[in-house]
Image 1 (cartoon, rainbow, N blue to C red):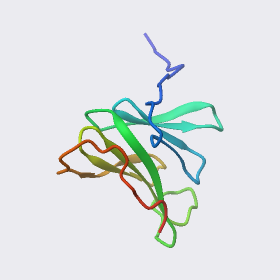
Image 2: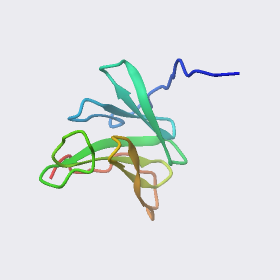
Image 3: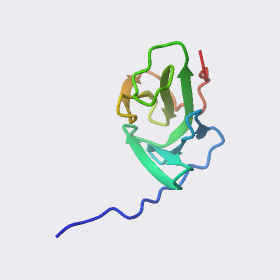
Length: 123
């Protein structure tokens, strides 16, 4: 038997800071304990990033120019997504050479939920 993926559906968490639009066109948003990456050009969820253990409260893109790019898309810089959660962690996701975001770093040690950490959006 062969299976083909036809449809993915995820809902956005109901918080003001849980949606971010990157310069590359992707929209990242908190979807329960995941970060979903929506591609408006294809009207599809391109990927979901799994590592948080509770509701994602904030999502931000960080695009650093003048840094050697790790992707093959011709971009000049490093693109990252930062997500904060009720699980008291901030996670940094970095865009790899294949264009996919992967877990880069987990910042732990917070003593409360992370409702809206302030992060710079560019360097």
